[in-house]
Length: 460
Ligand code: HEM
Image (cartoon, rainbow, N blue to C red):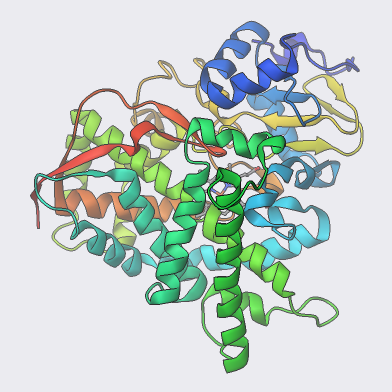
């Protein structure tokens, strides 16, 4: 691995770090279909700062050196932009999503959307998350095999619908749920994920073609959201605590409200980013807990100390539960990379001088698998999070700096409550004990097969 000492800061090197010379197209195919193997192989050969070439993007510098990542996360955010690097997300979220913007618009949207997912407002969702989990658990039948990921998706989708709209029942919400799930399934396998990365595949060849289906589902979702927006506007129903009310009441410096197009794209961003990731993380957590009996035993011992009907706040403070959730996000982070940081003005990072336009990509997966930080990195060992504290440049499943995930606290809160509730109420076993491996699901990495579980009994 390259260390900073080998790249003296005093003599910046004005060229890109070394990297594979394989043709661009081959590198792209490997990155889409075998991302983990490709990342590990390249890091073994070129160290923790190297350059890759992915079709449709400028050369990408992949970094898994904590000191270099610290330099990026603590630099003046104005030195970088992420919006143009997130262009592949445009078909999902639309032109106005904060993910595709930088500067003042991005900051304003973050200021507006962050508070509902933190502090007391977040805690107010505790009972709701537990109730929704109870409802989903009550659909499981003893002896029946079910997909953990489908169940966790049902939970996280209901939770985010509640947070965004203040309601998760009724015909419109059922339609929204069904179409959002179908939309995500269009890119829900390694092969179908290529639609996200290879723009030339994004051809609408009618309702039965994959992209045609995607376009129609997106249109239907927009129509459902627009009906909701118009209804609220007509009823002047903007006093609620939910996020849509908040967005509709917000005014910019000139006293202007958000346009319908802005509202639609931001709603889509929250609905998607707010449930797909958490559902995947929870499915992984259920897998690890049932795959490793000692982990399950230790976690149960900790959970039962809280008594019959534990208070949500007490659950979120449990140290081993926190370690299990952290280790879940370490070993297979839902996002392999943070958003790219595209250099806007020459900047020195880790002894390299990066010119305008260079795409810097902090790699969450490779950093989380460094032997020097996480001995035996392929082993699921929650204890490592009890034995030492990791810096935000060594452990960053939610990214960092001015782009850090706005749902970080909320996602950890939800993960802990759902996992605790499921384990306290039901006895589950993996339907088969073959190791589950990560596979691409759009831009995220999810457990292959969705983790099949069997309900073997009830606890309470
Ligand atoms: C386990 C669950 C989750 C994971 C692993 C995750 C991960 C991430 C990552 C890696 C980023 C990019 C950060 C960067 O580039 O530095 C991000 C951004 C973002 N996440 Fe999450 N996320 C999760 C849950 C959520 C939830 C629940 C919400 C909504 C409430 C959410 C909303 C967002 C938004 C809006 C951004 C864009 C922030 C910006 O551009 O400034 N995420 N997330």
